[in-house]
Amino acid sequence: MSSTLLERARSSHEWVESFETTIVEQLEKKPRTNKEKVYQQHRVNNLVNGIVEQSQELDDFYKDKDGIFRDEIMSMRGQHAFHTFYRRLRETREYHVRNPGVLAQNKPPMNHLLEVPVSLFSGEELYGRFLDLHRAHETYINLPNFPQLEYVQYLEIFAEFSKIEASKKGRKYVEYLTDLFEYIKGFFKRTQPLVGYVEVEEQIHDQ
Image 1 (spheres, rainbow, N blue to C red):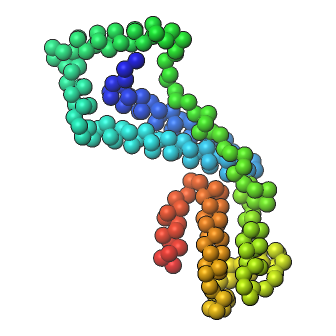
Image 2 (cartoon, helix red, strand yellow):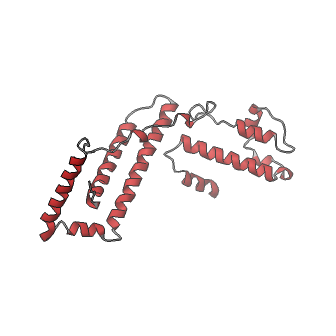
Image 3 (cartoon, one colour):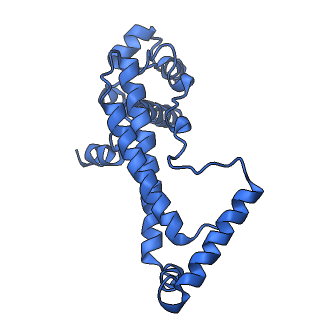
């Protein structure tokens, strides 16, 4: 079945409304555990992304840079109105004759947006309650001239960057810091999906 821009715009508006309704339904549920709280935020974030995607499509429709949307609306007015209506009606009938089992879709499929990957966190992270710095610790104790600390000892000092002697801050140390930063950034995004990380990063750089 052919899909006109007007039909697609209407559909996008309906999808946005459905996403908003589902977000409200999700937020009405009170999470009892940290796992439920984090997973709820991921589901809401997926739905918000769905709204953004549909809104961007609507923005393109209404900007109508190529004039197709305007021409389509004009074709439904004046002497062409009945011709356009019956052509759309014929196309709709022909589509359903070819596809008798297809039902009209009033709500967008959302199951994939409400699913959260099981492997989102490691066992050590306990659904975002704790950092898992075992890999960073392993890298740290293998850096040239760095102390052989136990994991618990490393957790106590790993953020004391100013205490590292300048002579130790070579290429390997920079690589270690880069990996540590990327892990913490990823951990933040996984535990706080609704918080704008770009804004947080800008605040960090400003300090």
